[in-house]
Length: 111
Image (cartoon, one colour):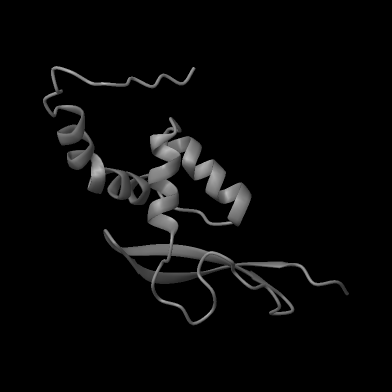
């Protein structure tokens, strides 16, 4: 009898924006090894940075949800992803609203 999926187990991990509840997949044989948050780890490494990068690249929160589920098998709620992106939105708005210099010696456009 081959190994097969056996639901999920809830796991709470700490991130830069507070605790996040994950549903970690299980298998009958117990051989599944999560890549995002390895067994025994309680702190997210680069998930916040990954989500912010995807968001900055133009992905919607729903797109990010689907991307994380299909690539690393992690289901994060809309609220969790929104909390992570909101944590940097004030900094982004401040940077976008900063006064520009009157003169720039070089302008680089990438199209």
